[in-house]
Image (cartoon, rainbow, N blue to C red; front, side, top):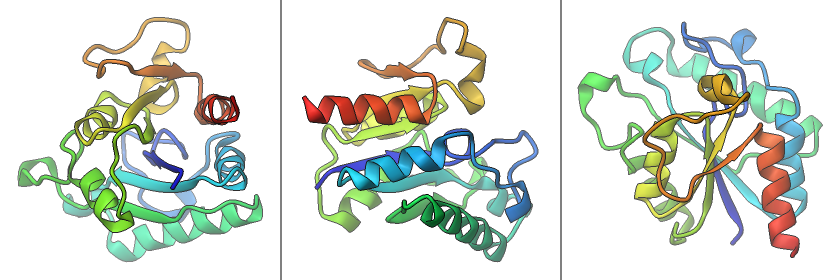
Length: 184
């Protein structure tokens, strides 16, 4: 099974320091939906792993989160793409759960649900904690320079990246890398 695990906020859609709380605030990054569709058309399954501590903080409810994801699925379908599943951590940092990135719980849940080992599965996100969680589960880490990492587009990189992390300008560049590598 060809599987890719993506972060959501800052990777697929615009992020906000005030949290993405409504479908109106959920705005796809340029080219991100087309990139996911390209993966799908090449036979890849795409799963989202996302911290959603706004739930635990009481900033939005599950109905609002479901409405954001319904919008994401609808916009993706219009591009000919799909996300096979969305896994999210609803907890605030103070709850000390295992599913909040940088811990690997969400990734372990994904591996169990799909019945696949995660060793070498590409994962892309916009923050170190996204990649630490994936790497702890055996995934291959990729940092996209959007969202929290947009500040590194002109050079440099955040500290603490897992060994072997590859950097990409955005989700489209990550997808191009994955597709060109798998075609070789």
